[in-house]
Length: 118
Image (cartoon, rainbow, N blue to C red; front, side, top):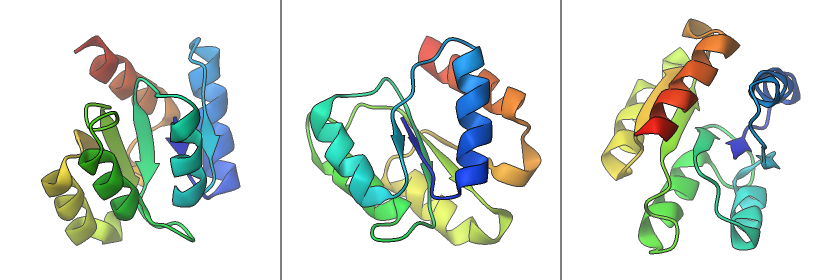
């Protein structure tokens, strides 16, 4: 699952992940992600922090509070200026984080592969 409100960023990751054979569930914000999680449980979630309606940290708290979702690996996608939010996210239970500007789409795919192989 990719939860990202920036259409351009979402399109880049979607294209690259689908080229690698992954099936994606897309959500534009936290509320949409929660609705889609009711329909099916993904193998992994790439989760943006800053989004409208419900931010990524709220989504993460809800995920970790529910038995059916708490074991889903979560990689936070963030921008550099959100260090405190990243630390909070890791404290809540995120498995890793990626700073968007520091990783190419190919590197994000490699991180996803690595996490799914664990």
